[in-house]
Image 1 (cartoon, rainbow, N blue to C red):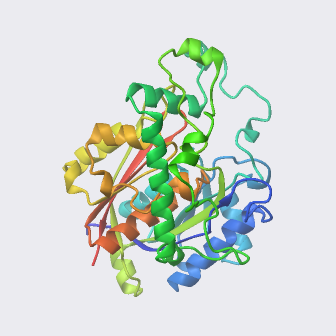
Image 2: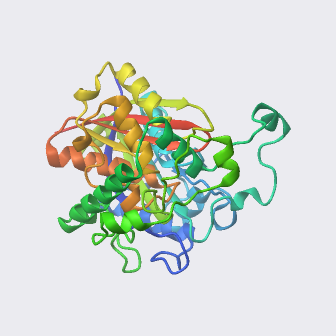
Image 3: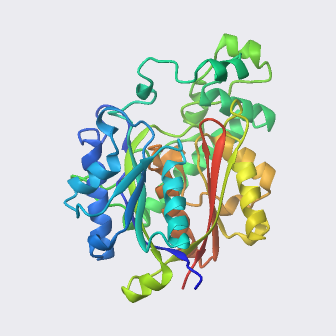
Length: 390
């Protein structure tokens, strides 16, 4: 029998600003994820002991996010001790990879029901804190890349230079993200997937009142004299306004084998049908969604215009604009309800949010196929294809 992995249900926390005073900053990361997991089980109306595994993404696995946070959160939520859990790190694609592994496990017969998602509390466990002041690369890596890697912001600048993307184009794209996210919030689309956490029920980063003029007045964020000498092609155009937001958040999705879902009376919303993961230039770093998309489409035997909705993570505006130039996708099908520039980017959890946005977009539009892709530190990317059911 052909086994198919289907998405049954999905929930997420609101995304809070990833800094002291942010809407979720007072919560322990385990508790944030626990609230989200409990909400998923309650919403799906499933007996939790039926779950075979929990697979979760978390990037900065140190301090309050250490020692397999997925297991801690499952237990903190009061869920059965008999259900195991694992935490993985594929950088910004961690929750997407968790989702892919969950679906692949279902297809392979290892699981019938599995929860996938992720968590990141960037306000309490800052980026790079897991390095604890040590050289995390080692002599052999340094020998291969003697000039060193660069900050992702520099990679975003390199992409802007290579694909000839202007500051104005990036600011206009960022303005679009906020406007579309605000419109989605206003029509109640985001509320359908968000579970309130201690009274917080909305994404804190959406700025419906931002303007192109305000975005244009922001200073560039990554200017560096040494980098300018190394990469003279950079024209310094990346700002906080055309970059993703540092955020706190958690996501969770219930994945089932299609026939099992039917037996349990669970509504199968979409089939997770194809997967791709690639490595790319670790210095350019953020260009991976381009080859990942091409690889996925080739595996599925599809052309870009046969896909109805796309979610391309807005790590930086330049990433999405370069992807659009290379793929020729219709911009009106991409990030229809805004993206990480407006909604925020809790790195270990974002893949779950992208999948929810993709699924919602297909259900609202009546589209059939949706593709999501995410750039990742180190020059990697995931791509996932789903087909809406019903």
